[in-house]
Image 1 (tube, rainbow, N blue to C red):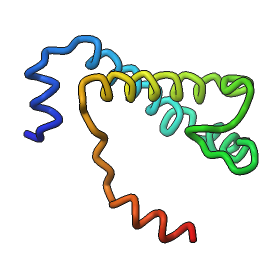
Image 2 (image 1 turned 120 degrees about the vertical axis):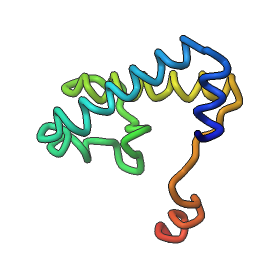
Image 3 (image 1 turned 60 degrees about the vertical axis):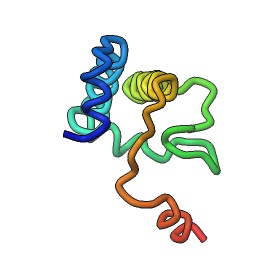
Length: 101
């Protein structure tokens, strides 16, 4: 069991578990169940922005699933930060920074 899992279980933290469930549920909708529409909508971000920070005045306009995903993502990050839980990236961020040069 990873340190991440142990920390959640040891804290018996219903607020964090709820946030995880809502995030994963929203992720499933956007990237599995609504994939055809997601493919159409990806790229509607403002110039220089990205999916997580689309730079749009209304992130839910014409795509409520993205708005729900971003809201649950930001709430989960807030709770993780409060509980001093760091995300674990699958690759070092420096690998991505090299690609963008």
